[in-house]
Amino acid sequence: MPISVSVGPPASRLFRCFRLAGVFFGAISLLGSCSSEPDDTKTGSPAKGAKTAATTPTAAEVAPLRVNVFLEYSGGMKGFVPRGGADKPATEFQQRIGALITETQVSGAIAERKYYLCENAAPRAVPFQQLRDVVQGEVNQAALGTELPQMLEGILNMPQATQQVSVVISDFIYGPARKSDFSQLPNLIRTSIAPVSQKQLAVAVFGEASRFYGTYHPAVKTPMTKRTLNGEKVPYYVWVIGPPALVARYTAEVFKNAPAQQAFFGLKTDTPAFAPLLTKLTDPKLKPSGGTVYAENNGLTLNPSDGPVDFSVGVNLRELPAAWQKPAFLAQHMQVRLPNGQASLVANSVRPLTDEEQSGQPVLAPYTHVMRLRVSKLASATATLSLALPAPETPEWVAAWSTTNDNTPAPRTFGLDQILAGVRQSYPTPLPPVFTVQLPLKKD
Image (cartoon, rainbow, N blue to C red; front, side, top):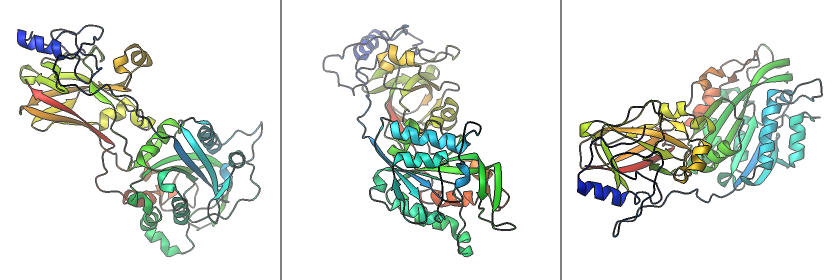
């Protein structure tokens, strides 16, 4: 519902509201009048001597992505990539990973990309065509493979690894030669990814199950050291590691067909464009505000004494992973805080802006989503409202996909919860928020 003023303001306030309508956030279009909200937003002019507000947020100039893709090239992975044909449909692995490496190769967001096969030695650089051939099943002799901690350590110790995005594709089955290493799995992982904590990198984990044809090598070797599978599904994973903002961009702009099983650690974004939008944007079924609100001095002046004050805000969440841009996720996780007051997110108010809204109203162009906030109490003369997205902890699917015995093939991975526990322990508790934006408030 639109922002509306329940009672007409005195003449002095009315003049002040007209005078400041064009000041707040520069080009942010506000109410043409303080007593009603028109169907179309209008832009006013700053009053003489008024304090100039910040200009409308615009998309920041971002550095192109530099990406390294690593595919584990071992006998344990060969079953994901059977040699196909017209009568043999591609496996889920071939479909998803084929699409991912293709998007990485052609995406304009990526300035430089390199491809590697992780064998039983250091990662070996290969041309894109060779990596694609492997995914398509053109594999003659796979390597023995490298133990998981050593593989991760070798990847993160490569030159410039901490300034770029590393995409690691593997089944992440850990079967160490020394059986005593099983008990130290979280610690071994944490040590192998030491640059993650030292350089404050982010790790995104994506899980998928795929049909598998050929020799399956479980971590638990009893009763059988290996099995031959004929299409049974077993898991594989894609890890994306790098500076938080770059990982966020890669997962949002390149990994467009990501599976539903996702986990993020240390993910942060730059402060997104954010501003109140005093215009008709929300669901007409939402009740109108009963209080007074208007823009002044780079913030909002309001009076919730006659009833809660509702107003819409725009925010640019384009850099978030696609799953985090969904209204249900945002409604569940977004936090609104107001010291010396009470504020909340209005139920069912979070939604993405449509292309028509963004192109038809320039004021909306910097934002991807709109949501409605409610201030029910403001005890102090001034306060700062904060809107934050806390980083979710390890999701429930990780436990469901983990097992202590993978000898019988299933969509579960030996010690997955322990592997990701080592990742989680590389970050502080609680995890830093993904982003926080603030809005100054003044009590009328």
